[in-house]
Image 1 (cartoon, helix red, strand yellow):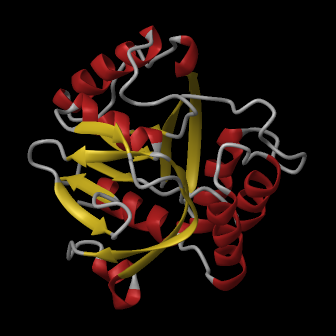
Image 2 (tube, rainbow, N blue to C red; image 1 turned 120 degrees about the vertical axis):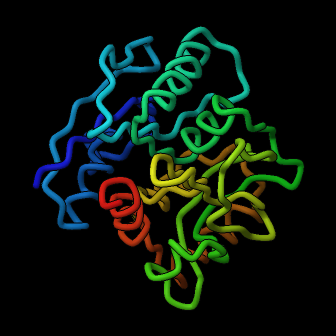
Image 3 (spheres, rainbow, N blue to C red; image 1 turned 120 degrees about the horizontal axis):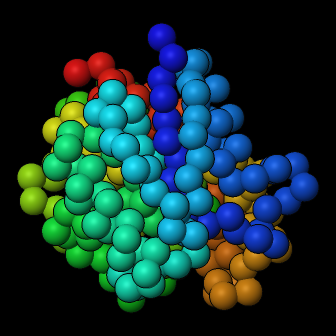
Length: 237
């Protein structure tokens, strides 16, 4: 069975993609291919105001990362917030990653703020606290790659916390079998994270950057497990 995934691009990250990554959406295509799913895609340039005009409850709408903040009120973000609220009310399947995790929370009544504890980068371990996620992460530990300063501080109504950590209380949440989000980046690879930390990290404290680089050598991210969980949760009720 072929899944349909609509990627609502919230950034193209100019100047931040290495030569071995043709575009940001290709990271998600590689991720879902690694999971073993047959997927067809439609890409929307949401950061330029493009949003799906039709909402199909049988398809997945993926809101990925952005250098903008989910609490900003740029016109395209305000339009996205309204679209998410409308899509949710119509039963759309929603998946959020980093900025997407945050903007979906805001759209559905949660809160997002910049974290006073600093920047999160590299591989981080989260504790899985929702039984629906436990079979996918042995030992109830989820390892994902991160690159963020903002965090969801209040979950939307009816959201169930899936994973948490000392650095980020709300690492992952779901709403029934309709919404699932991750603060981390399942689509990131070690090579891409290393590129970001080596070439695009002027705004990160040196100690944080070096510690993050060490995690790339010592820990294995579980992006495919996160993607598998998301697809099973949203499609196989």
